[in-house]
Length: 109
Figure 1 (cartoon, rainbow, N blue to C red):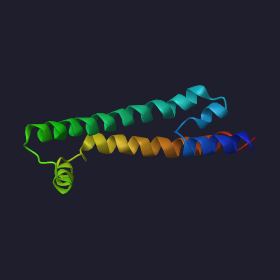
Figure 2: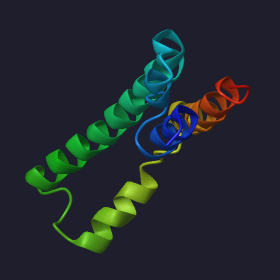
Figure 3: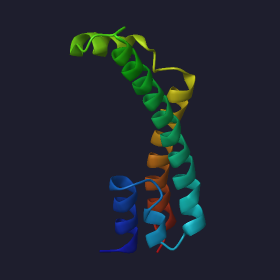
Figure 4: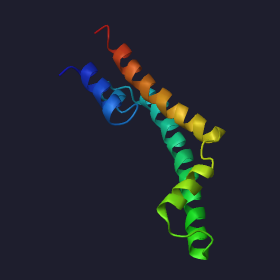
């Protein structure tokens, strides 16, 4: 298998930017890996904050342990604010960008 094919598959299937290590382009890989990790951190922070809030409400008795009610509360929490939307967009752009960049780097060889 050619290095280009490996790089594209690794970037597409595992994590954005990892395929660039196959091409020996570590600095370019960091251009995709670092923003993706930061965006994942934002999404995790938001998700864990909501989970912590829900657990506290359940433990205090303000929210009963009823799955449909909890799902309704999660939907009402409004997790689709600007920061989560931007973080999701960054992940998608980095993922697609790393695939295209890995393909573009080795196209002439």
